Image (cartoon, rainbow, N blue to C red):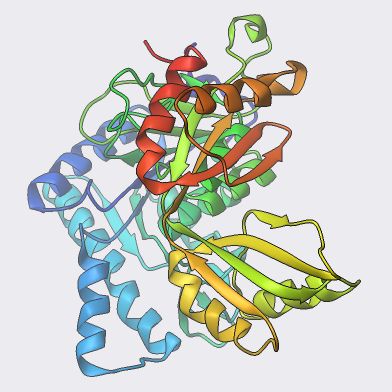
Amino acid sequence: MKIDGSKMRGKRNIIILKFGGTSVGDADRIKKVADKIISASLEANRVVAVVSAMGDTTDKLVDLAGEVSSGPSRREMDMLLSTGERVSGALLAMAIQEKGYDCISLTGGQAGIVTDEGYSNAKILYIKTDRILKELKKGRIVIIAGFQGINLRGDITTLGRGGSDTTAVAIASALNAKYCEIYTDVEGVYSTDPNVVCGAVKLDAISYDEMLELASCGAKVLHLRAVEFAKKHNVVLHIRSSFNDIEGTWVMDNYKKDNRMERPVITGVTYDVGEVKVSIFGLEDKPGIAADLFGRLAKENINVDLIVQNVSEKNFAVISFTVRNENVPLAEKVLSKIENVRVEIDSDIAKVSIIGAGMQTHPGVAAKMFKILAEKEINIEMISTSPIRISCVIKRGEIKEAVKTLHSGFGLSR
């Protein structure tokens, strides 16, 4: 299924292009990105490009901060990390100017991105588009440093992991753009990780809900916050490669009205090896215990994924849940304050998920998934479901086998 972005109705003649770190990883790649942006501008479009920091710049800055401080403040870290995207933006603007086209680079603050006070993981409050529109009316290409904004105090803030994707989608919404193209190092969204399954298939289009589930369950092609923002504000996304001109994957609703019967029940299989299982033994089995436990974790901004509570024995229960690897030290600190319980951490786990809007109307999908895993003698430790997703926690060493067998078992391979 092909979608002509130029035929999107009710949209301004503005497109947003976002380029990730690998796309602007060195001078040669920056020049190639400049050519793509110029080409887009010649197609009668007003172009706004959002850029990430070059390659591993952000990681290097984090390491550098660690060399001078054992506990740098979040404010100063935002001040530091925001420079990576500014470097990319300025170099890209120079490359475009060198080719004879009018262009200007802007920081997140100069572009009018206003956030809350949450350093290192700020939320966008609103975007003042006056400056961007002013530059576009002058016929300029506008380059915006992603991942950052400015709070009401005038301090620089960053938007957290995947923040440049979120910047691009937010800008697209604020400018009522026709669509937002996310350029990355892959050619689109696949039915599973092509590095694990050679028969993975690139999807022509996918719904917001399916993309949300894929992103939340381990697919790294697009950040979860960006998809949430796109769904909320109905921003059409196009995920494609920076290194060729092949059509990518469109993320939008109502794309399958005419071919619903042709689509498979399952859209994709994804996995996540970035979680651990936390089990708490000796909890009193009475009302309010779970609320207190997860309230303590929420207070420290620790996000909990899958949760299972075992049947009570002698008025004591066992609760198991999963959290991100990076949250384990803080979670252990929080749980250590609960008296008379024993905490076990299992890092030898992974999560495999199947996603597809079609499963809402097809019974037996869960049973088929469990049977496929059982035939490979893969034991399931935890299960979580939504209307369009089923996730299972298994042993980490079995994750690739699980992905391959589920992908094949549901007929997704070429």
